[in-house]
Length: 145
Image (cartoon, rainbow, N blue to C red; front, side, top):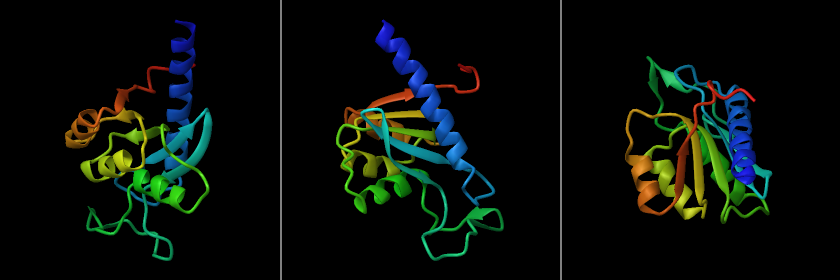
């Protein structure tokens, strides 16, 4: 029981950190942050935005541009350029992953996803559960510890 309580507190703290990291995003409609954590160490991070070298403009006429990367995709692809390995890691993300990001999560070997805000579609969450990835929603607004 003590371990569960400790994990709950860590989950909330990492989600809050992901929310702060989301503030790096230049996207106006929604700022999303993600952290990949393994053995209580952050091994990667990401936020939604344009690819390296592109102007930091995510929307045009209130529509997200097609080349904008999601926070999860940024965090996972950043791992490919590092010596870190995401097998068995936990992904903390401010918003529930879409189906495209869920495919990346599965392929990256991430075994647990914790998110703080629902997405309008739930196909990404359903796919993660189908792949036997542990998925947890946590309301960080109600959990201040």
